[in-house]
Length: 467
Image (cartoon, rainbow, N blue to C red; front, side):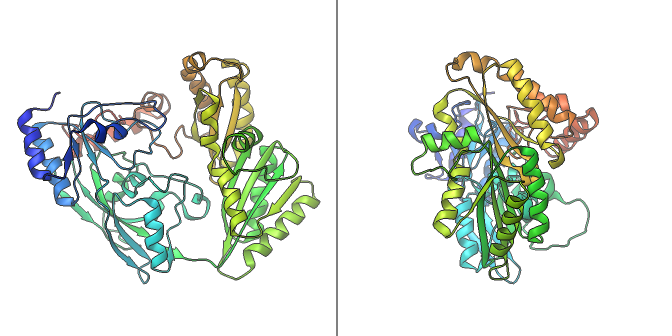
């Protein structure tokens, strides 16, 4: 429905002179997904700077039956943050760090705080917030919670769901729920925060959160190894867990194609090892005992080389070299952009099934798009594979895009067969709703619809997202 002029006027009044915009230049970057797969429109950009103003906006829209699309840092990859005529509610001005407590090991921040700013606030308190991903400078806490973000440290610390102690949110009727507790234990009925985590803005607008903090570990080591296959990488993962005694923080797999593209397209990125290898793994371990992580990785690499599990390895000698290794891993997505059309699949499978999944998916993709280039990488320590498919070197972007749905079906059918998920950390958004209906059980879908209808009976919150 179109937005009545009187409702827009009420929203402007509630937000104040600096709390809204209809300026096309101001709106433009918020109406396009960063890969330009989705673009949209909105009658009004709402820019509240307090929870009370968020509540006022939602209450007015609820009364008028006007739909809302919440947006954080606009780093989402499945289109759920791009409005199609809804009011666009940005949390970018909710930037306060409300508390940082080393005794509670808790950081309380508002939804518009970027992940990088949360890291800084934690460090200032002598602690660490461990969620880590490449878009930390623009991704915001509210968006990360709404999509249950993962990243590179899930192996040790879990997803965003595991790192949230409490939430403050505005529900679809405009009421504020203050659940900003700092408790590790609270067994008093349904845990509402877990409904909001991963709900992609469909059950309310997250305005603030209490996050778990952890000690800063003095011993940290980073290595890159070259090896022959994903199967050997999984064997190395099991060995690394045992060798480090729980100190393993990251175990990131990269294929040769992705590494070569990063060296080709990204400034300052170099080959990590003297010779090229079919596969690479970036390993990071950290310990509270000085020197323990370094010693553990040295033992691991020496034994793996001796037994032929890996073919080469190098251990970062300083923080600069460790950062260079991580730049190679974090540049995998950006390095694909100059190469033309690409199908991106964010999937998770049981760790034991990763090698089989990749082998079967490679065969299935070549049936759909002969000559396509597989760029597989990801957080293998937790089973999350970014299985991307670039068009053939001399292929057509349009032709490759036309095959996208068939390619996704082929890949996701294999994911389902091995007991995996078609969305590991990006969510469903508008991109994967149809596919989710294919793979989720009718019982699960019905239950989710009942929950949504109970909290948002008029479906004003991100109406095009989820079921």
